[in-house]
Image (cartoon, rainbow, N blue to C red; front, side):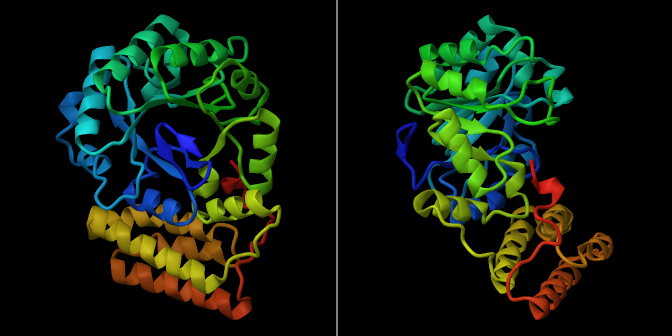
Length: 340
């Protein structure tokens, strides 16, 4: 797929998720089949560039191309400065956040709150595109502010006219948050209006759902978010299904243990052991959700204080699973927490 000047291995995207799509997770998803993995959003507030959190979010050392960094804010000049800063720090694509529904973002008129002010949207997009003439700029937004104001078609046209190279649309409004079901009619309509690539996002939880959404909307690609938490191999499963029409067998428990081992090692190295252990807890919870005996395991694991005990617990849990079945088996069809 051609996207923002890059030739991708496929049309599968990792959605930017705060506290999730750090460099270790992005690298893992790319290794397991994603064509692009977008970073956690980086603030446009230049006063925060020196913070440890912002420095980590701007750390792309060893990351596979293309490196896409999402920025968030509501002031055109600050957004332009943030784009330049990140481009200078190694970003190869600048992605603008107009999709986040979180109150702390929307309360300062950033994220999806910007969709209420279409002239401001245009000023921000034009300022960012002008600030980084040699770096492609993309945009992620929602279908609208609420169900009575689904203005994604207007925002999409503004984006194309402003020089945005591709757009990703989440099939919910800002008011919907993550409730209810995503709708794809708005995305399908937008696809008929613009010539730039359109990426569909929202409730893509399986290879079959990815194909359905691609066929229904005519979108150029799909963006997977929460369904990849604890299940990053969804990208290779989807890549295989789209290419062959066949589902891959469930992965071997031994392989998923190795994936988890390597991911945890990357987290410990990236954050340092103390913070790494804390960050790893949520990933271990996601990896084990829905597996036999996982509830008791998670309660015990969340009390473990250090790398050695955390890794030993993971080894023991998956070791016991492997004795029951060589392949990964969920107690349910799909854990509800992953079905988003």
